[in-house]
Length: 276
Image: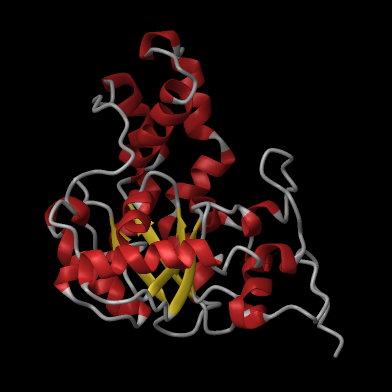
């Protein structure tokens, strides 16, 4: 059978769509997606791809040479099957921790840049898997942008804060991709209007500190796997992949408050978050 035409993903019609992921952790960056991935990956009924971020859907439009490897659906699907040795290792881990075997009911992956992919790419993704689910995490836009800048401009670049000029920070904050990442209401709209009703989960970053176990149980129920407190690590409230705990300098905060004022208001109106 000839597959329908796709602009971005290359489909032959011979792919095994049974291996297409059931859910995607879509980001954006610095909102708790690594934390979510770290805790879901140990659940006996959840498969998560390795490596964590595949960048497949977010690379199809731009073909960024730093991320893009292939547009073939077959290439993507090969990440959603455990090799025998890894299946055995996961089974041993589940038996040791929970007294039960590893029997995944759902497959997923976590790529934070998926939150801001073009609607046309989401259309192709959903055409291939109409019942796919997505998990969008949101965080105060100022705090998210500052954390992302610290990671990319300081930690990953192996520089000190004082070595990064104010103009470089501001250019980072105003980058079009960074601006899209702050528009949570628009991101949720782009995904929710294409997914089936109830197939978009919106998690609030602040709840990782205030109600981590409850959030993880909410996510388990959303994914349709067994929601049991024994699958929640006692240290679930601890941060994963943090950057240095540095307060936003006053000059940057004033700039960010102006830059993201509309985004904060839109998020408050759509999600009811009380970001002060």
